[in-house]
Length: 457
Ligand code: FES
Ligand SMILES: [Fe+2]
Image (cartoon, rainbow, N blue to C red; front, side, top):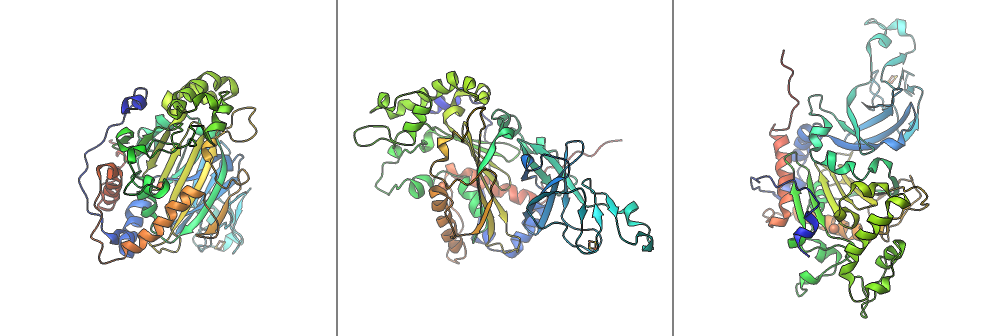
């Protein structure tokens, strides 16, 4: 299987020139560096923060934290979404402390100032008693830039930021094809992790670790033969990086190599996936690599009739392969034909650079007539009830086998970054998304972020 097999129907983005970069351990441990990141990058980049389906009706709201900030996203009367800092403009009390709700007015629990869903102040007790004038005439909640895309709510704390569409670059068109806005969350696990948030993102910016950490490869293993449900061979993986700072990696999936027993019989979960698409796993005995194209053909023919209408928008590769994206600064996702593996890391609210908050969620397509998510690609994850969100501290429960394996490394690596003996990273070509990502952080810190064009008179 060669690169051409994936790429013939996938438009490429290209790979921008890299400057080359030094990445010392202090980037993951220093409070001073974390403060620079916060002031220059987190408060200026577009952040994927909420989900539109959490806000179906006027006044519905969702609150999410990013580092020290907490942000409320609210459905407006005209159907749009606005985002506000979660802080009362009287004397600074946070307005809400739950994750979500519905409000006719946000009433502060300190002195009862009441803000409308559009941020205007509607009521203040003793409003005649303010020498500077009635606060209802002057005061509003502090608003952030906010936009929606792919069913998610995105915010930016920088009033001078470029539009979300410009920021996302090729993601804007790429993602439309899956119709992700209609997908529903089936796994919602959030944990606090004792590592810097970049440890998480670095890991999802490379697949170099996959054979060692997830597939049991040793130094004696022939890595070309290490296959799982995805083909991890670097020479057969497609890498793209956009000028805007977004990355993509495509790995062949539906491959079934590594999913046969000694007799060559196809094992689970591939066997179930083949049956789901009306094929007999026995027909592929000894030929697991043939499952990929057979699945593409079956999904293409049967999918739209069975409610998988988004297949009509997708290239063949996207019917079986893993389209893995990392969005600057803190979001990684593997998009499968029917599954969206959502991985996000945020700085910890307590300001400690050696801690972060990590989300491991799955969204699945909702074809009409299907009761459960079809995605056999979710694998043996601990599924919770749709829309349920479980928060816990690292170690209190599993995040699923693969992510547990990643997290065990994150924590050890954070220890290594504290060592005076660590001389800085030494990266392979296939890790150049890690380089690019750190270059972008420095671009923001050093004042080279993209800015909206000033209107000329
Ligand atoms: S701080 Fe909110 S009403 Fe006083
Ligand atoms: Fe991993």
